[in-house]
Amino acid sequence: MSVDEIVMPIVLAALMFGVGSSLQRDDFRQAARHPWLLIFGLVSQVLGLPLLAVGLAHVFELPLQPATGLLLLACCPGGAGSNLLTYLLRADSALSVSLTSTSNLIGIVTTPLVFGFAQGLLPQLGSVSPEEALQFQLPLWQTILTLLGMVVLPVLFGLLFGERFPEAARKVEPVFRKVSGIVLIGMCVALAVRNSEMVFSQIGVLFFPVFLLNVLSMVWGGTGAFLMGAANPQRKAVAIEVGFQNAALALTLAITVMGAPPLGMAPAVYGLVMFISVFSWHVIELLLRQRRAVYPE
Image (tube, rainbow, N blue to C red; front, side, top):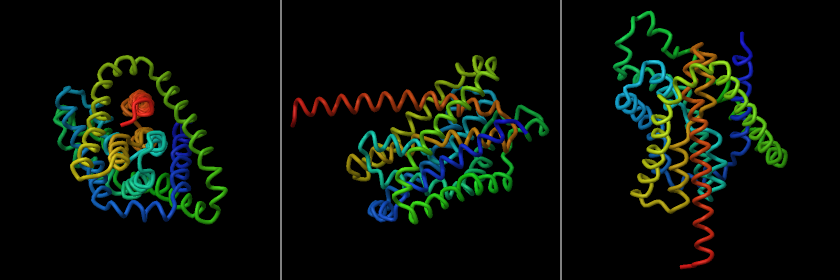
């Protein structure tokens, strides 16, 4: 067993524990005021993103390996980093945390099932032999057990910890998030270094599909929430949740469940794209706030 196969599940579990410990019952009560936004956000993540990934794989004529990595990423639920971005952009934190936790809890079933369905829509799968196609499949029960141990249980334990020790949870959750995030970045860098030749060959292939997956999903989420009459904080929360996937989970599934680290290239590139998106959006938001302060309406 490699170091990646040991460290990645621990990092993912720590991130999910942090998500759980940040939850409060009041978050669900506030989010329940917008039930249709919750449903729209979840359906967009579970069904909309995988279909978008299949469409992008068609448009860019991606080879089977990067197409599968892109689809795996799109089938994963929302990432823990979306909650931090929601806070920075002054969006609806209760709605964001509720969407993140719910999508990760139901992801134990939706991730493997939707991946199996959407993968059948990839024409690239027909270009390889059945034996070769097996290495690109996501084993159903192994995936469910993996998600149960690395996502569902840590979220539930984090929730119980937050309920039982609220003061400690408020202190521990940022530490979990920062340390886990640093380790995750380190794992991505290590993966890129070990597969440097593949990274340089695939980054040009994957960058624009991954970038469009991120941007178009955010636009879809924000536009849908706007058409549903949501206020600005809720629109931003839905856009962030739909647009930011759990890259750590995608990496873990690629490495530990599928045994195919090259499939982690798409999530690794996605991490770079997310950083660019977050930084750009945050800068634009700061500039708009300064403008409103100088030129109040």
